[in-house]
Length: 167
Image 1 (cartoon, rainbow, N blue to C red):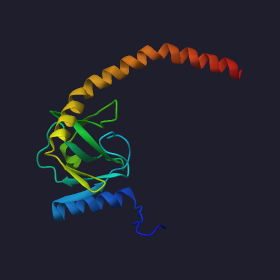
Image 2: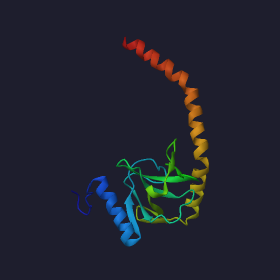
Image 3: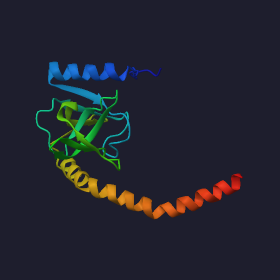
Image 4: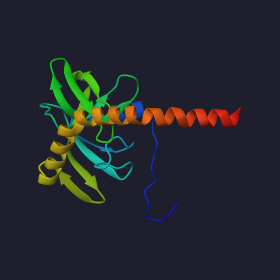
């Protein structure tokens, strides 16, 4: 191990998020290291961390941590509020999760920590980025579907050529 480096301790997901819930309950906030790529380019895997607070009010554009109830958790953006819950989507995704109930939301991001720099939710550039991502989310889905339809004939013909070569 290199001098001056803190080792990363890996703990089971359930234990980790039980600790996050406990911190939220006892301290009103918790810090979570970002893992995964669903919120890129804003949040990067193992580089960034976020500070969460308990979810009192949730707005379109907020980034929230939620429990998928299958042993997995996600940090995604609220795309829209709906009658039966929320529509969520990662900034780097082409699909959204629909009708997520309020009860599954663990916390709301209030700040991002990146390389010792603190970016609060009041940051103007962060608000503009959030607005751009939120308003482009639904069109992004249809753009992706359109691209897939346009590319489908090329993918099929490419696969047929490969199959013929393998026979």
